[in-house]
Image (cartoon, rainbow, N blue to C red; front, side, top):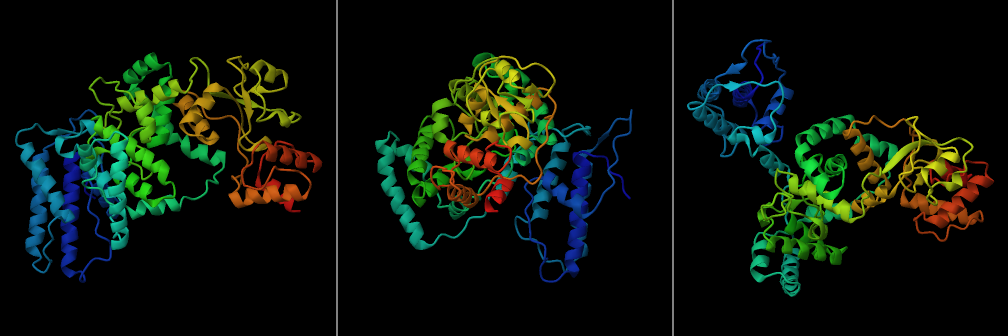
Length: 531
């Protein structure tokens, strides 16, 4: 098997030879391939598909030997291989303009030309980050994002006409809100109705993942490793941000990891099109129209160009996924370039904006978000999710720090049992509630807090989660309330929202049935009510 040193030259030759072989096969192939044509977003993605199709033994550089190769010579050899194969197979149909082979050939040709004036490429033992890649590959991530964008869908004429009428009516409302006509017209010049956005908005599945399963993904080993690497790379910026806003950098980095996987998944949906589509759709029209006006004001302020304002299908933007109104309230220009730029590859403004958000939401310096604790079996679980107490008081009630240390009085704390008495337990402080201001979810706040601790060097949680646990669906929660009421335990109505009244009713039923009265709405609880 041919052994090729890793690096750009080997990658180019590998891609070129693979495409040469592919063209040889085309000559004897039926009318078209049964495999869908996929345009490579970058040489990196092409190499991944080549490697998957034909294993190659890639040898590491010999220790102590200079690991380099002539990129131009390798590129020219790959071009010759493609050309020879084409000439040798006259029956092979001409490749259309923009075919993956031609696209790769163009990149190889650029590499060959550039090599005339450059030194040989030196191979490295780890991947180079995008900002260090050669100029002709520097935009690979953006091309990859563009290639991953959903294909446009045909819009019925009647729907398009109605959308156009809505835009005309909305223009007046936007101008009345302070958006200039010129800004509006430029922003809407290329706006399209996006059916796929409406579909996603209407088909959001219920969140039934257990907290344990959620955290296993949110704080996976790979996310911790990547977070530590990202925090180390951005250490200077994070330290400066922490000094200004009194929010530790590892928690800011944790939000970054949770929201966009450290900038890797910022979203590529045109934001004005997405927000206009959702505002027109009407299901949450008032909310999205408010976001759309805020987005137009961001453009008016000059923070970003319309074509660069991309994000998630629901309107969240940048490295830490701000919605437009949150951006207007909290985004900062930390770099001092006159723009609050949360979209570019440089995450500085986005990280600083996240710290500013948490600071304004009430972050208390030198206070943890929470600590893992061990709860004794004979504990009074009626105290869970109830009033806050000082950690020393919780300690007198039998709680112990999971790490074996003492519970320090950082401030009053609440006992949180995400999976009931059988799961991991936490004492949560004021900063836990501050994180929930970013995303009002206990699971999310636990994810940010625990990921931040792991990035800072802490180990995994000590406790374990019950197997088979999951969050009840709305229909199941309503059934729990109906069955409680039928048994004489008043849940305060049947609406699928398990508030304080429902939790009290659950505890009362658990006590009457000889179960641990932790108030946790679990599958075993529902099964017990059904009996």
